[in-house]
Image (cartoon, rainbow, N blue to C red; front, side, top):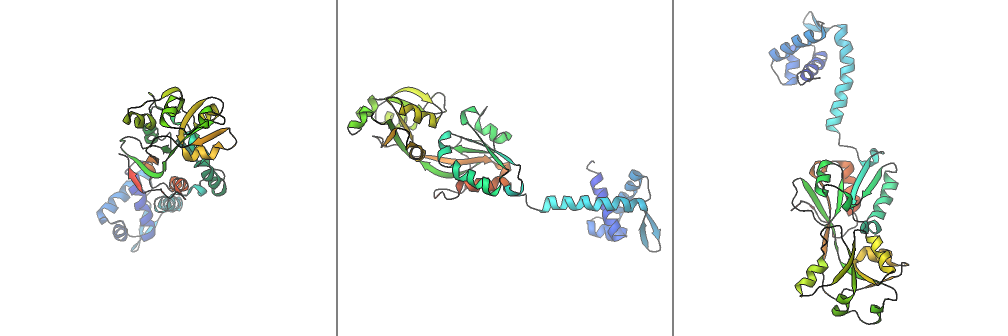
Length: 308
């Protein structure tokens, strides 16, 4: 069907209801001459007169009635498609969502979301992909549709990216139980002298910790980096390394893993964490449903805003 044929079909449906060129023109908001011209095109298209004059009324032919019966159903479906809101995720049981985030959030934010997904849309799915494995960039993946949501620090300026603040990350240090450094208060000198593990997906590696140290004219020795939060906790538990990690997920997983949490010996700025998505999904009710599950219960959750 081309762009000229849909107005012809709408005209046919209206003529079948009104049985008058003048009345059909009034309903369609066009002139009677436009309706007459469309009727002529319909007759050429179908090879049938479609309407014949019987007294003062236009009587449809059998061909017009047959087309009209099918046409009404299709036009009603189009009306519902345009007028009805998009279905919620619970009404799309097979829907698959893709979230890019660091594995630190698997321990804190993901469990309640997954439970709600199982209860309210048990046949929908949430695929979590690593930030460092999303190419060529998170912003490109959001814009192109490969990723539905990104949870993490704010992206740089990207046209069409919307974000909502979820919470602020505060930091803690973790060391293995029995680490010699735990025998005395951990001051800045002792802490800087330790071997450090950095958790980052950035290359080259950089961290708010190193920025805070540089402001004090200090530095630490990073002997290893990894993009994996849970792997970092396991590595620290089995070595003499120290890692500076987001406090909430560290507290969630530390019990039973052989690590101890201590406060950093310097002031570290908090890092805002945002839920981020492309503007084309703003009015998608299924997507909106999922976004609300990520921010539900988060006191710091903020309004939607464009990316910087």
